Image (cartoon, rainbow over all chains, first blue to last red; front, side, top):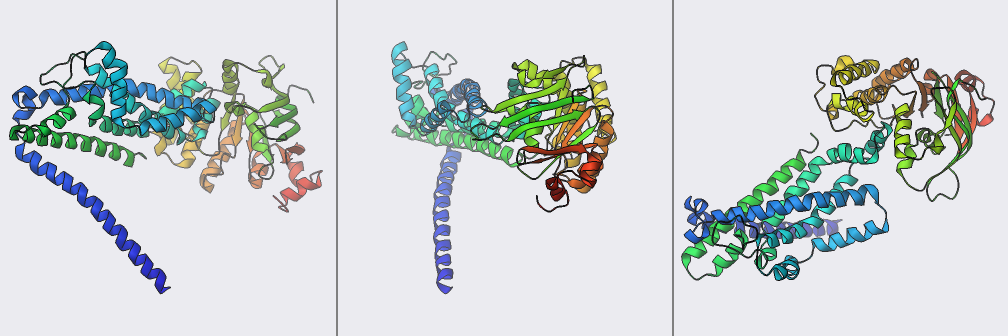
Length: 271
Length: 263
């Protein structure tokens, strides 16, 4: 009895310690970011482009690529997820696709960057926004597929049966009822995967590359916040380093807000 | 046995689940009489729900199953049609508009109360807004839930109580003016008061539709139904007037089940 209690205490102490260490590092990162980021933060950085010492074009560029990637990846991914869950749940093809999708999800993002470089950038002969978009969409796709697959599996089969029993055809019930029932989970998944790709650097490094100037031409080198942070942080001058801190802080806040938004939705799913 | 009294009838009907070595239902012969309530009783696993779910071919959602024999449904002109011969999705949709189903767990759709009832009507091709509104109201009145919901038609149906949700599901089915309604243990997830309301409703519906109801509750079967079918291990053991089944069954097995000696 006594021995068991002692073991219990030791385990409790160890896991508390581990949690504290993990949290410690997290807050250390956030604290440093806030300290350094806020110190160099200035309203000007939101109104000027990189060439003039601001991040306006970078923010716009990063979001434009991430949003277009989302617009491409979400319909594709949701349709694939519907196929997996509603049309061929136990089939061999679905088994293969599910596994491939899981593998893709953990593929190093730099590999996806190289892939798009070889397949697209190298062929068209120049860096460009489209390259970045394709890479980000490829990163996002497996996340959306598996989110859709999982969220649809949570919809009770009785709901589908009820729809069918009311004289609905299968595709109508899926589109009009099952998707609706899974809406909150799907939205959360899309938000979280957006937060994931909006902060990616590696897939953009040699696809969209980077630009100092404001542009919306997706066939040109495209401004990117993350790639800029990577570049700025390695420059020798203090002004570049300061801007890198400020940009990192902004990016972290954006990702954090989207994440919290997603979690908030999940928590209120019952309503 | 062939006459106009039967709205539906199973003739030597057998059913095998995908991958199962033996049929779950073996050569069932059972009539569902017009404007009567037929109760299906029997211990768990006897196949009563399986039989009920065959009557509107909801099983077809899942691949690999096997039907044998005939399931007949009376057409408008009085002749019988074998619903096992329906192949296209549009034929099945039409069958399900004529033969509706209420499930054990209430299954409101994630939309407003109004939309829940209007949904099936829209599926069946009703487009005019005024007709929709009229028929939704009529259905909700028919399901004795109109007074409770008329002021909150735009609220989500998910916020209703279980009993209300179940009556909404009945309203949804009634709105299509089906010939047959299949109830699969409609009250087993509900409290006694909601159960009473549903039973009352089912009894009233009898004047408009023919009803088949699966129930585990002996009292419910004896209170509600005109005819009772007792099933055991995939066989139909006995079918007769409810009074006869409960007072003086022909089969020893039926008597044992009804008196609670097993099951």
